[in-house]
Image (cartoon, rainbow, N blue to C red):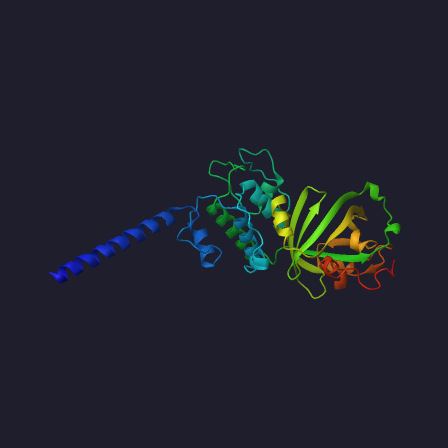
Length: 331
């Protein structure tokens, strides 16, 4: 009798486990994003898959932190006890704008038009890059909240894109000390940006910017050479609340400067004139498409001294250490 009871008990337990496993497998494998979710879980980007609801809206910080984990490093989101912590949801359009800006995707246009969008260069840039597909009815639904499953699909495509390309686009620029009185351009005609720049981490270099009072940016930069000529840069818009939250983690002093942008000889020049603790300092920065192009550039006559490799003139160092000794002997 005891054996019969034991047998029935074991059989009952096996039936429960089998049914539970079948229900879990049936639900997961039938979901359109099952493979993407499983892949991200295997790489520990999605940690707790048991309570994972693929069709629930993902929070904004969850999406941004996962993007940074994939593009930069899984360790970066734990800096300063965690970077982003917003509990707000994020729309499909907002997510795409962050991705396109962060990855520096080219503005896109396409013969295919989403049925509910007349035109959006960010959305079509992401579409042309193979990062988004839209809904089966050819709509994009930009105002819909991004779901966990949609986030997983986007992140997996970004991972594939990074693996199939040599590298994520790098920022390659040279920096020069200048005398602001000798700039051969009417700055009143230039694009002008009033910037407050704050560092929340120095290595890796993480900074936030308030631009023209109402525009907020986040950037993370990693050097790719010993002199700082090329760096991997991830930069995108953030909300005012995210800016205020990150501002609490600041290191050093906030840098105040006005940036002027103009073209000279077909090349974009950015002039930074500093104020506050860095009053009197002025530099010019020029971006290049490659290291070879940067090294072959012949500086304009008004660019006084190349300080690209001088770490004392990196903005992070200026925020931490102030003006270098002898900074004005060239001015």
